[in-house]
Length: 102
Image (cartoon, rainbow, N blue to C red; front, side, top):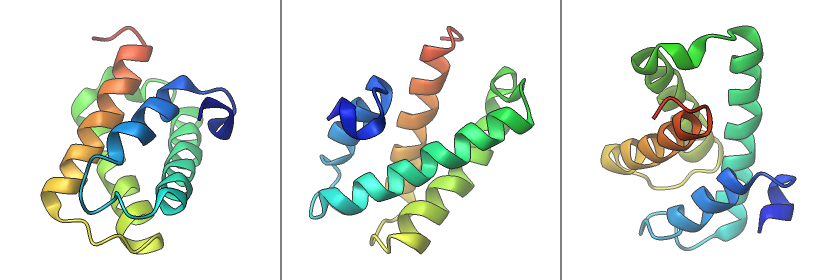
């Protein structure tokens, strides 16, 4: 799985966990497409604002918009607000853990 995300173990792990969410479990390809889009958007945000991870609340809000766009709007998953929050928490936690902030 890691090779699909260009060696990014964080996204391979997130992908696996997301398949446990009922609204997402039906289409692995769409989950991949959504996560790949999230990854692209987050990398761009981090390039634009190098210190974005220093403000966890701001980062979470920015991520939530990205998750909504990529999962609900773009891939048309029938995700509920609690699904978006779960996806967002998972992504934010992985980024903060990777950066050594948690």
